[in-house]
Length: 260
Image (cartoon, rainbow, N blue to C red; front, side):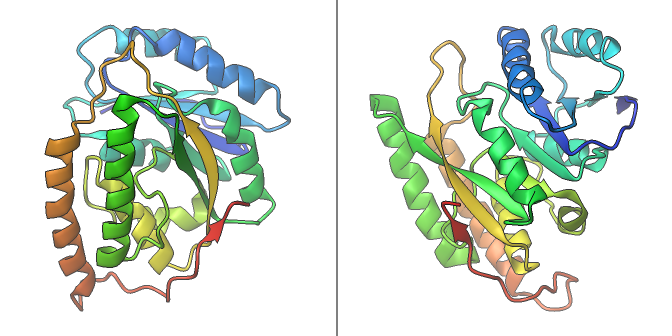
């Protein structure tokens, strides 16, 4: 794994996991930086390329070369979104570390409010609870999302939060011990880190965020195939949480804070 970086101590480290993002990369980065530049926050971007097959790595290198306070990681093999975000969080320097999906189906406008909630100690972890605009595609996805949310809470204790949302911000000092216990390299990582954070006593808040499906980008989510994988992983994770002597010993989970 190749690292390009210059460490600074910002308020926020924003991790952007990338895989074949060439068509949307420049516009997404522009929209993100425009929002962050309007705030008084100090911040860094951390790009993690998960072995893209297009020009994404070259675009990242060119961008980081002109912004020496930003960072970039390049995976030698494709590892999955969870591992990509984890690696980015490990090299982050910010008081708050967060990640969003670079396709910006949830816009970056919510970032400043989420970061401030953590900096003001109103929460230690803030999750974007997705609100879907009614479309034929999103109706099915929303049904799956609601069903998974209820099932995951029943099986592993998510607190009924939108654990699979790819829009999360956390106090870095508190999340690093939790991160060390995460194992899944792909999409289920989101559920895992949410549950482990709750069990570690981390105070979680949710904010509603509008999800707008992009039709100019092929989604990497496959509802039926991924849903089957989630069911298997939920069962395995439930068994892991139920075992003793594994090192996963936590405080009692607090109630999540809604709609701050």
